[in-house]
Image (cartoon, rainbow, N blue to C red; front, side, top):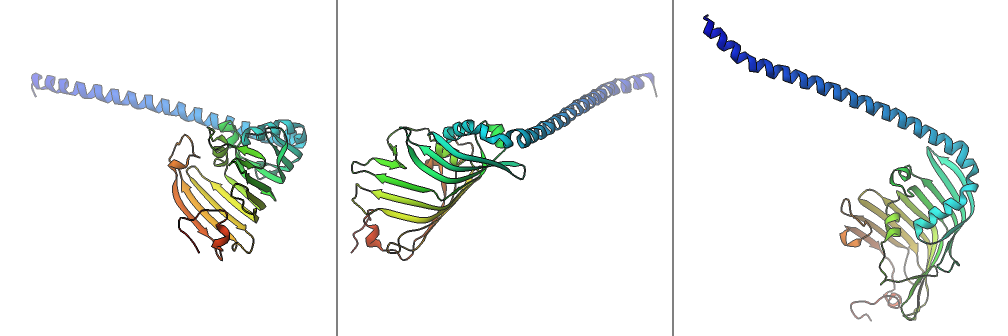
Length: 285
């Protein structure tokens, strides 16, 4: 092989050697960066694990045994969640797996004047660790036993829920509804609902044995409602609903973005009795 041919081969091999060395350098750099990232991630997981364990131990041995001393803070947190002042008669703490559980007796929700508007005999709440991530109260489960709620519409059209006036025309940020739809599960047992429509001069409608379950996911919400109206009105009611809202919705309680299915079972219904509470689109005899 002549000297000119050897020179040409060396000239052609030089870019290949440079590319090879460049690729080897990139590989070593990536390997080092990846190793540093893995090491940092492992250390973060270890530190987070020990912080979580310390938090569990602190709750178990320091906070929960003295939970009565934190009642004012819990009342303030609950009042901020529902939007009205809340007072708690007695407070007990336990554990549900790794989640703290609070049992509240005689929970009273007050109106704007500070008067008792709604009394809940028993409330059980299991906290979710998402509370630490989102910075507001999150519950894994909320169970309410034997609540009694009255909804009243006056002759001038004003609506009162548990004695608290509700203004449909008032602009609201729907924070309370968003909070309800952000909890994992809400269960109401053996409740009682009384609807007093004075504007229509209708007899008070009482629903007994109200049982409601609301399960919320990221986008999907499922509701089941059963109630027993008076026997001369209808057989027990059964309502089921599944609906979704758009991902990353600014207000998940805005029904304009909902879509889903609704199932209602109303048997042995006396339509003439219901005419006192609703207007039918057609004339019924």
